[in-house]
Length: 149
Image 1 (tube, rainbow, N blue to C red):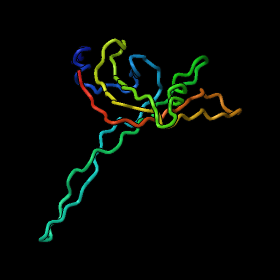
Image 2 (cartoon, one colour):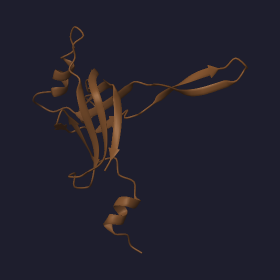
Image 3 (spheres, rainbow, N blue to C red):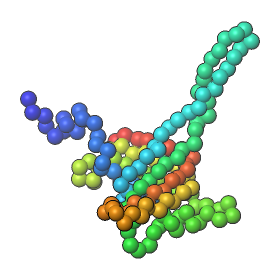
Image 4 (cartoon, rainbow, N blue to C red):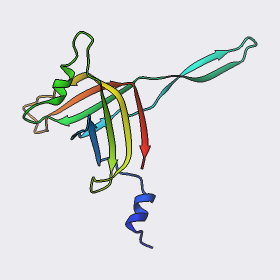
């Protein structure tokens, strides 16, 4: 029996190649996003009678890496990391969403709160290659939350 498109939407996992990254309401085309993890450390507890327990500890820091092609014109990522001076930095909220095939409906969204850049890597330059120039932005953020639609 053939599945309808509606059944496929709910019975198959969401592909990871259709996503949108919005930084302060500006959609920026990235080719790769990693680090959208929610992690907690572990604490060890030993009571006075020899019992040993492990418990969840503090939330670990969030480090997100965004990769995108290098284009002519202004580079907003460079301008953002250039705001870091004398302990002043512009923190931004970021929304990363998986979309449907048309890109007009969000299916799953990660909300990143108070992110700021810690590294902007330049592309590897190689005269023997025909690869696209990719820059990499590393961010640290306060927290990641997600919602499913």
